[in-house]
Image (tube, rainbow, N blue to C red; front, side):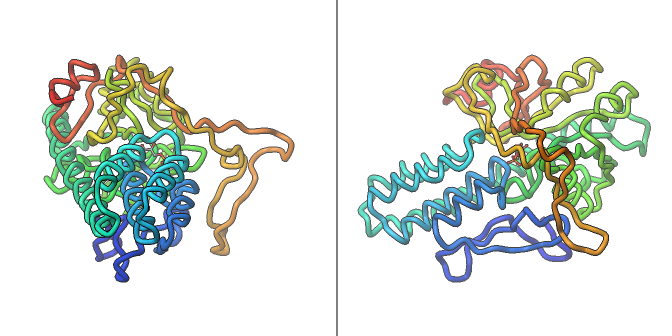
Length: 363
Ligand code: MRU
């Protein structure tokens, strides 16, 4: 997508042909900074400390991390150690394991002197595939938005609520939840997006709002607790969120607070859609509540908030008493029964095992 008049992806190969450049998302929306990751340790830090985040982008970054590790040492020991090191960075998004498994499966049978070029090629392919998957998700989601628009008074926008950032910043390009929104804009369908701020890290306020503003999408930032109220008043036509891991039965794990939005949507008859590329489906897990590891992050993310001061400095302030401990579960699980549909690259699936199997019969 564009930043100003220049097109960017969120990750690309540096001109040295070995390192990888990323948009360092910690500074958005206040500063647009690009950082070069040169060593596998840099890649691990970038994922763990959320310089890059969002399930698909975490996966692509890990794939490039594997390539960077192979350039330093293409041995089996290095391959396995890199898998472990990167896999340990964030536990919930399944795209991380998917990408690491994909790289290891490809590289293990190859002779060491062939691993480096194979690793960089496959990482680049995974990045390109992500863009294609998101574009297809966009087309499939666009059909839903079009139908809702057709049932509204001409010129009235389709009001879409989204949580966290499942935008282009969470992927290589387009985003998952945002791809249908961007395509609706291109198709001239009026849309308006309610952006949940998404405490504690404010990915909605900082990233989704920045994306929407940058692409001229009419949007309104709301506190996380406003969604239910807006739904009761008929001001939300649909919800579209992303996911970090969706089970073979259609349970959806996503950023903390998603479940409450799904409950409110159900109570108010608002369709609740989840946009996801197939690498986000964990076919080995059927009960999301019991089997998906939920990342527990530092309580500092709850007690301390980043922002820009009136003098232009980017600073952190404390919002709670020094002595108050904070808990920070980063994801929750929305049971399949609350999900209207899963928007995938192959079409919209019912959130159930038969629904997913219909679109992915090979699984
Ligand atoms: O903790 P984050 O910012 O990595 O969480 C991101 C989300 O929860 C997204 O909704 C999810 O990864 C889907 S991104 C297309």
